[in-house]
Length: 462
Ligand SMILES: [Zn+2]
Ligand SMILES: [Zn+2]
Image (cartoon, rainbow, N blue to C red; front, side, top):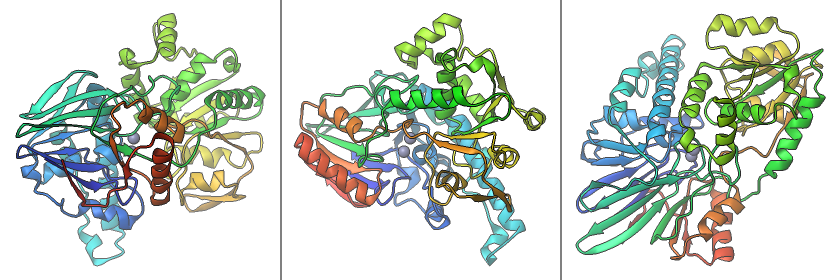
């Protein structure tokens, strides 16, 4: 049996590894590469294997950098099943359809405004139809349900606490009397984060494939972070301006609504009207509240209290365009949550145009802002930003909140790894190059584990 590293080795995104056991080939994740146009062009290149020869895919969670190349795999001839947690099946529907819509719009734009000869025939990586076909291959399992997916390959998912449905994957492998256990971390969440449970403990493995996104740093303490958000909202004056919050549709939007419900009185939220202005975030929220069995104790208690979540009297879902546009007329007393989280598209741009030059308004930046995005310029304190080709002075107060993250920090990752009693060999993936090195040293130093940073294409035989 062997394990071959393929995606999320040279870069953070594009998670995908290949397991060969008993003559069967299984992919762990099939994620999209996200980043610069040069990086993203790799998505259209052929896979280093024949998709029709892949027997199954095991998908850790719904994020596009883990799931986003599945429709392409199906388009290229994959006919097997994709095993994942049940909630991930639901989230994949909205995430993958959105990914296809973006790709279709982008291809259309390039055909209309070609920069190269190839652009005249620009085609999306996959279409919404391809997505519908690929969704039929998804098989949802519950956490802790053990399933033999192929002879000699048995899997079980545990809660990774990263986004709804995110899984730590245990794989029991058998070949010619040899038995090995591999654990694939997918993405590991923060301990103590809102709504979701902490990453579950796994005690045994021969090898662990481990993400390292924030393996070099520590997040701000979550309690201090919450106190900070509360202080900002309490001290913002409802009489004059609005609060604008760019947020990722899946995860961060639901966390914010949940926190608003939890701290409704403390944060004096009855002075405000809250708008969730994102069709995708609205759909994702419904899926989140549909899975109370996946929520942590605090979230369950809040839900039982009011029979629904979030318990906000003043929450408005504005899915339709007219509803969204109507928000523009509100000059004060509104908290507006909209996507995209990094302000590189979506409805948040319209709200920023209306509010960024108003000193009485405030922008609450709660998420990661990648280099080159509008969100990053705002966080960097640029005095002027460009939105839809026009320049706007930044006069609103900008607050950057550091402590909310779907990923665990170095302490979280070490804490999760410290629970293993079997001293597994660790393969560090899903991180920037310098981060992986720092994290490898931390694993060796603090836990005495043997850790390797695999190269793309590298094969490990068991
Ligand atoms: Zn993720
Ligand atoms: Zn990821």
